[in-house]
Image (cartoon, rainbow, N blue to C red; front, side, top):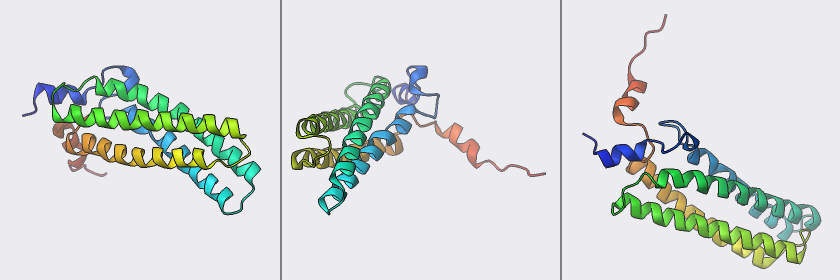
Amino acid sequence: MISPTHERSKRPRSPLAGPYGHPFHAILVTVPIGAWIAALVFDLVVVFGGDAETFAAGAALLTAIGLVGGIAAAAIGFFDFSQLERGTKVHRVALIHMALNLTAIALFGISLLVRAVVGFDELSAIAVTLGVIGLIGLGVSGYLGGEMAYRYGVRVADERTQEGGFAESRRP
């Protein structure tokens, strides 16, 4: 039997968080992750002799896209966080997950400011370093997000609901 505290962690706090079993946070995190990894790839293209004007500007744009996506993912993720009981292990994991993500957003925000000061068509070692540190934190945070979803079942449908996917169906 599932505890009431655990059951609450599976339910959306608001329709903005996504329906039961389909949290929007998990979908939204793909935007900053993809954008920030692509920004690093663009920066590396510049390092290895690519067109700095084009790829450095592209990296700046991707950093900005990642910031918008990261802020949206954080806002929606906060709905899920607010469903977790304080004092539990999953709440502590969620706090670390949130702190790492907010730190990554701050690092990429500073990186974008550095890019603006240097010029969007120039490569900045500081901006790239901030981005790499942000991506490392994001990787650790992603691991913790997986712990919450796959080990502790936060915002994952309960086993009774999951079992429906394994029932045999009759084909005509």
